[in-house]
Amino acid sequence: MVNTPNGALAEAHESGRQRAGRPRDGRIDAAVPAAVMELLNESGYGNLTLEAVAARAGTSKPALRRRWRSRQHLVVDALVTTVGTAPTPDTGCTHCDLIAGIGTLSQAFGTSLGRRVLPALIADLADTPDLKSAFLEKFFHTRRASTAEALRRGIRRGDIRPDADIDLLLDMLASTTYYRVLFGHLPVTPTLAEDVVQVVMSGVATEQWRHRHGGLDDF
Image 1 (tube, rainbow, N blue to C red):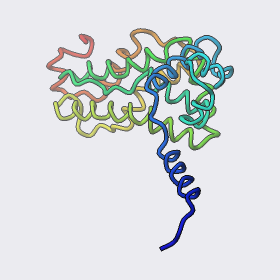
Image 2 (tube, helix red, strand yellow):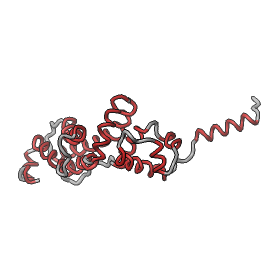
Image 3 (cartoon, helix red, strand yellow):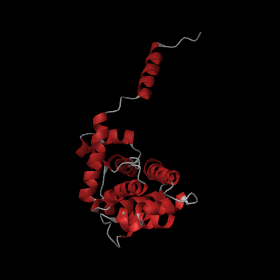
Image 4 (cartoon, rainbow, N blue to C red):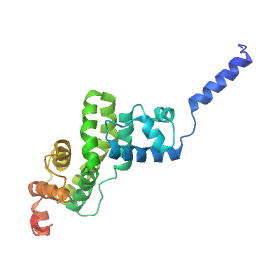
């Protein structure tokens, strides 16, 4: 048996307590994303600082550093929290599901906030692999998987052709919003999601679906 000095025992005990960490503060977890989005709306992505976020959220910069690797990672998590990754709904109506799912993307980014944040964030993704991975995993792929399931439900219902290319349809459904936000050449209109879904369905809808809905012009 090895004798260990009492001081060493105390030090080891304290080290174990530090590794266990303090309980997460739920108030901070809720206040920080809201503070981030407020500041982004007020001063833009390039001017966002951890100091400003901490002051607005009523916490400290070290507390932010313990939770987020960088301000860019903080922005990604704020988008996940505020814009959301809620599943595309299952209403029993394929085109209704798709309009609702893509519509949340248009509503989130079709604002001055979206235009001020998304292009700069995308630029950072190109230079920061771990940030890109976080964005894709937490936000992009989560939303994409939900819409993919809506398309597969459409195939099972007989609304969408079984040979439809799911990945291509996903890109077509979402890309118009991203394209307009990134380049700003045209607005993200309130009817954009419905317009895009109509065009996509015109190419992949089954005859059964067309007959049931009396043609594409009626939805």
